[in-house]
Image (cartoon, rainbow, N blue to C red):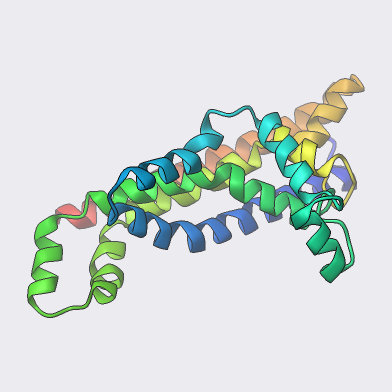
Length: 228
């Protein structure tokens, strides 16, 4: 197995991207899921559809429009270049932004489902005891929906590990900056370097399997605590 410095660089960059994306998504999706679940109306349905769109859209479509939005010639990219002094596209920060948008529904939907499964009797009992909605959410809803939050975090992390189209469109292939493991794997296959490609694939497979095994165990532990 060829464990070259370039391989470790791409792998650590991928893990860093997945970690940043997952943490940001948890901060965004936990309050967003609760807010969506407590609102009704056609505009809420429209918003949920818009947030879910990355699941069905080809990654290259999302990557293309994000690339335009982040380019120095347009609003967001122009503002970033003016205030930060560097381009948002073809940078690690740009990859994080794109990954958050692309993986958002994979975190949002499990968290929403987790919140919806909290028994109404618990919510009614909390309200009857005089708890404010914010207190009920943090003390009742969030702990009871821990399984959904774990599932959302794991899916967004795993999804980011395997991203290709979005990261290729937004970041290209800059070593140490945007060359994540999926891009490096593609390059090795293109160059017919199957030994290195096998190493990348095997490491990603081991990481993904270990992650899913850990998440499955945590979810089972959570279900056992609920039952007993």
